[in-house]
Length: 200
Image 1: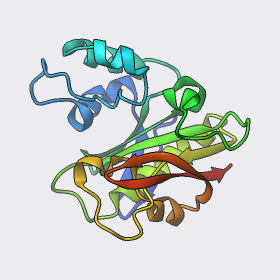
Image 2 (image 1 turned 120 degrees about the vertical axis):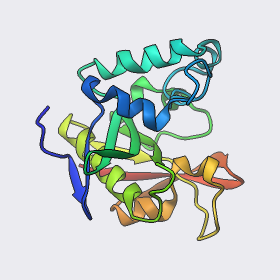
Image 3 (image 1 turned 90 degrees about the vertical axis):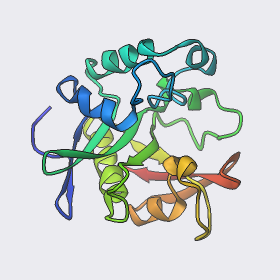
């Protein structure tokens, strides 16, 4: 992949999560204690049974392996040399979303999914999530995605608990050009989730 950023906004640059950037992936989604079995952004990437069985350092090893693949597991946002954001994006066919009973398929297009956006504490309120989403979309389109989907909450302006805000909001996706494609039976933080779609 070229070294030029996928997206740039207000001094924030976004790059693919390559193996050379694995330490920055660890900073964004890994635990402070390497033995902890935290998400590592795997809960919507691998089947639930596998996610429950994968513990501690094995979770880090799987994500490290993903960064070695031709298609990277997501994108990273930087303020200068400091990593400040993460976005997970991948072909939906590779994800549990492909088999979800709560989030419908709009059609048979081989869409990509952008399902997790994280901003590092101390850097929120600067529009970094917008840069992350723009970078995720640019990466998916560069890899041939015919469209990108997100599954944010439709919170209608109400505050979303930060621990559950990783799915994004409908407004965030609308501001990136996405349009409502379907409603779902899924919820997050007490709010309904919707399918937002952006064609290439």
